[in-house]
Image (tube, rainbow, N blue to C red; front, top):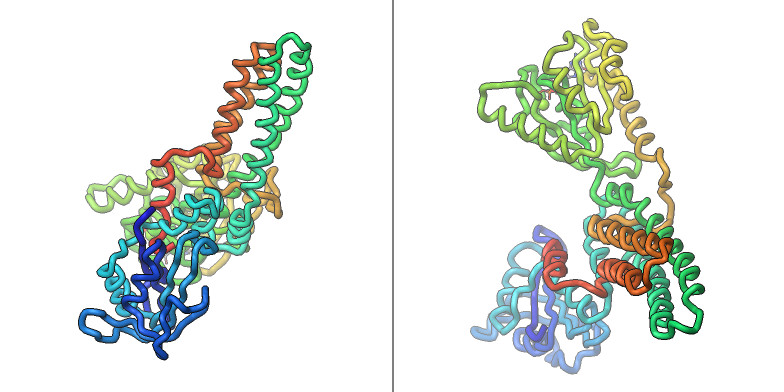
Length: 459
Ligand SMILES: Nc1nc2c(ncn2[C@@H]2O[C@H](COP(=O)(O)OP(=O)(O)OP(=O)(O)O)[C@@H](O)[C@H]2O)c(=O)[nH]1
Ligand SMILES: [Mg+2]
């Protein structure tokens, strides 16, 4: 981390202000090279974190690049804990780009995605789950997911993990004492103690895991796929839910060829909604690829909305749809109920006995609200209440918790069977380490690289 990194930190596009940022020990020198204060102030004398007004210029030809405000933030009380310089210039694509280029010519290196936050983590300002929360905060699509990310950034998850890990440390200490002093009669006490604490750890891990499914949905959106044979009104449904004409709707079967993804928020539940090509066997190569893609997204769906056409008889294609959704979390729509009915609801219900069937006329806007209500009910029913408790939203955290759960279960089983303490110790230690990967206390370089590579540039 000896080099100085730089990046544009604001989104590219027309805007009032653009920010270019540097972090590292040469930040100040580079800035002094390319900045002239209006009243000839030297940035070196500028007060920590105070803005100075002046111009960025090219030292080679003396030409002015932009009129800016600049802030020097002295380490260690900065985002990265290194020296940081931020330049506030005019927004738009050109100014920020020119300033960044100038900074790079003067000795900085272009930052990798998330590298500022990675330095904050490596320099101990944030733990890993907090660093991940930074990105979640930026990407949050609903108030609720924003609140959860903010809590995580403030350390709510880290504190909980620390609490559990401390119990594990205490267990390890007991085990070691018993191993070191085998004759003192403390072994019996140790087993009892390990059992109590092991169960406590398991309970806490389970509590966190119970929030994970809803947490993931709040963070990434409920993955919802609209499925049906051609021409039943899938794209019409997408448009109705979005309340805009996003997808092309025609009476030609096979209109939608590719999958179309959009985000929408139904009373705080984020939905990633996917319209698909109508399922049928076709000789058309493009359509065929679309159909294959549709079948593929079904596999990853949290929820499927299967659409059927009430004005036509049940066909073999419909039966294929029924097969695809049978075992899945799904809602069945019987659409076009404004047309003469050929398709008996009761008959359909026989095919999908356990599913909710809603009659709709998307053309007339009927049944959409009922559908939204049903989605809400499905989401909010179940064990987990969405409250202010700590929620696990990140799949990586969930995986670590599952590993830790397995470790502690094995430890408890060992304790119950009175197996030798050094065997139990191994499981307790693994549990402690697996939880440590959530906060980044125990983690490998490649996992770190992978996590930060998903960040945006300039953060
Ligand atoms: N009468 C009536 N027509 C509808 C209704 N919903 C959709 N349609 C019509 O059905 C036709 C097909 O609608 P789409 O939304 O394109 O159907 P799709 O399922 O996306 O079709 P593909 O993309 O070809 O798979 C269009 O002409 C729509 O206007 C409805 O509730 N009643
Ligand atoms: Mg369509």
